[in-house]
Image (tube, rainbow, N blue to C red; front, side):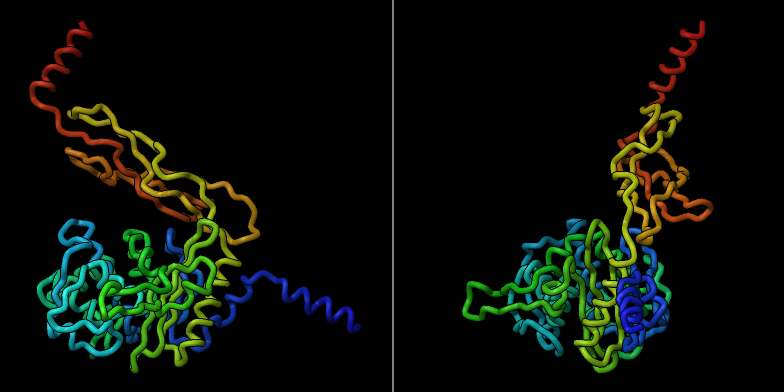
Length: 381
């Protein structure tokens, strides 16, 4: 009998972790969510729409705004930012900027990403927008653009302030925007230690507040936070076997428990799901015919890899595909989104992927139009 019980016990230990998700994986968190980054599929949720204080997880939106400014050429990594008295006077976590101190955008961004520095993010906010209030307005404009319904920012730092809140669901959208569309962030958030003011007497050692980037396989970001109102919060992203997960826990009373429950979320995701790539980005999916254009047709290319999220152990599946075209007008620029590839598992839509123009196409000139028609008439005769 003892032998039978031991066999049953060992068998239970080997059960798929999928059973784990039916329980509360994050019992101590006020709210939580686990997302697969490429598809946005929610693999686990707990009170995902509850509005709560979010501490420095706020800085993920600040980072999006700063990275967009750099990508658009409005500011540069090697620009010199002069620290204002307002920025230097911020409390909480900081890199101890002094009023009038000069530092590059890159070093300040490093301070924000690794040390969650309030003084650095405010200095960058003022540099980008002219004032902290103007920067917060940009944050809210981006929140509206992303369709966030339960988020309101009052400052770029996440320090406790009335009316400053978000949800696990909205933070998941922000984190996806950051890692999918601004992957440069991972070069900073994945560093465990580095230095600022390295060749000065005030050399400053940076240690990442996110310990999982050192101790969890595949972790390379993203943001931690703590305030009295928010308690311990964390957004962690990790990539294994071509699948990236984003785990978020909010309102934890103890930092070690926060780390443990975030780890449990990631473990559940990686042990229960896999990403199946069925098409590579850049391949031709379809063509569109153009009228009164300098091009008769142009190819539609996949903007991103087509990855389908599958539960481990479900076996190989066959998927159906459908091309849906957008309305468009000439001129068309290379890279413009002209449609979507929809992927179905039976009747269920399991993924949509942008189709982009392979080249430029512009309106045909009047002379070219008449020349083409004349050729048609001659050929017809």
